Length: 59
Image 1 (cartoon, rainbow, N blue to C red):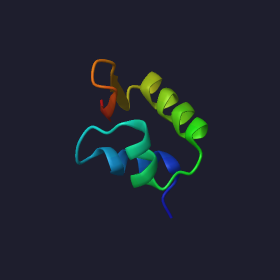
Image 2: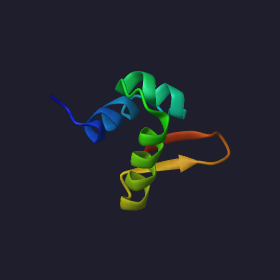
Image 3: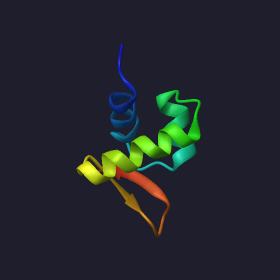
Image 4: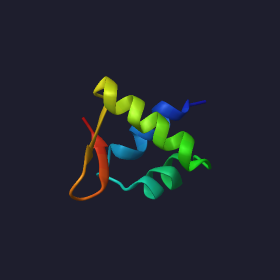
């Protein structure tokens, strides 16, 4: 079974997504936990956030 980090990366492989689209595709029910994980992944360089479009994408 995939962990949440792998689910997020799988969801972002196709195209950049907004937070609610990431949650829907990765099947993550908690928005705060999803955002916290995305921010942690951003700090590590795994994903990036486009502030102008409001979308997350693989870094």
